[in-house]
Amino acid sequence: MKKFLISILVVFSFALILICVCVTNGDACSYTIIYSATDGGYIDGQAEQQLESGKDGLTVVAVPYDGYEFVKWSDGVTTAERCETNIISYLGASAIFEKIV
Image (cartoon, rainbow, N blue to C red; front, side, top):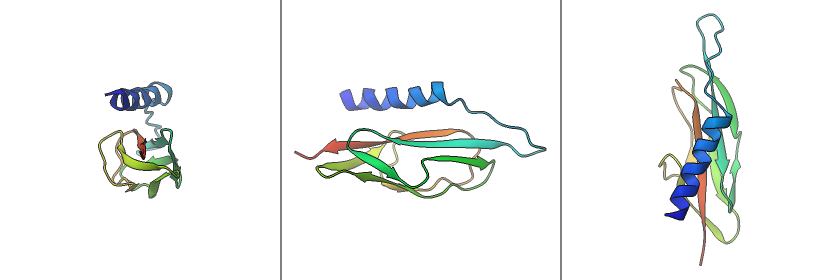
């Protein structure tokens, strides 16, 4: 339960700090993707991406430090590697890691 609450807190923190802004440039809008990591790992790849509406993001991987394992992303994705496609809104996701006992 504690990890779940931490995950929710991280996601809401990003939502408050990084508000989804559609920047009008003719007919094109751009959106931000933000990936972060909890204690126990890091993001390999471009953690912050600015994309035009409908475009695909770059691949990132949640990498655990020694003694930790990747559990899931805060939005429920269970694969450590991910690449967003057809972006039409802001996305913030945090990689959740767990200490190996």
